Image 1 (cartoon, rainbow, N blue to C red):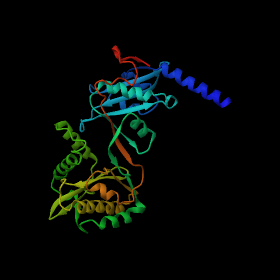
Image 2: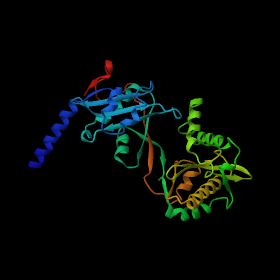
Image 3: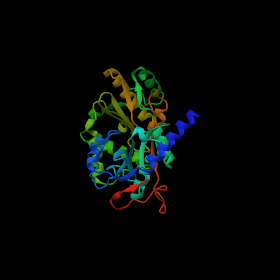
Image 4: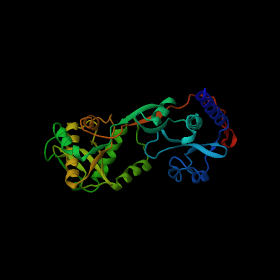
Length: 323
């Protein structure tokens, strides 16, 4: 009986809170008082014209927020960040915040989450779908030798890859844009704007051209393993074109050469940043003893024209809604 009474009190408290949550548009000053999630990441976004942001308040305290924005490079979807205070979860606050964002936009809402996590289950519960999947990220040093042996079964052989630093000035930059564009063309196309391509070029600020490896076939670049170095190198590897002949062999050669370089340089791990659907990197990654979590890229579809706020009141003047 005591357990039943406690459960009843808890359910009553949850209903009471849910019935008195107020929703409104996020204000710049809200960023300073939010104590959960990553409010610092909102500072540069909140005043942008493309941003749609809502907060949930209970007793004048912010207990949740959702922010959606348009990226520069990929614009067929809007990105979204949803955060709920740990003490306020399980009360459909996140669901209502997302629905209110959906009311205002006409693009799918995209985010990423660890496979099987509560965050992924939340997005899936809103009708979200996986549109791309990333394999585990990390190749630890203890597996370098095993990975090189596995890739050697596919690669073009010793000497099949050269340092990116040996290429003429500007060639690596051109190859990076070319590869990135075709890799994403079928499922998350790069926006056809100078701003998008400038953003791609800016990603090369941390590129280590000397460590980057270019696989050659018949003397021409066939695949590149771009190396971005921070504490440990992160590698993006694919062919220069979608239909490059001997693509698997070329990518394997470039990846193997980078792992050998990392081993000689004393790195503790190599991180591989790619997708299971990448036509050459994806199958090769499945051969490697990668560790860590797998990530899914998810999208929540656009609400139908006759959709409402999942049973909630409409957003009124000033952006206010009472639960």
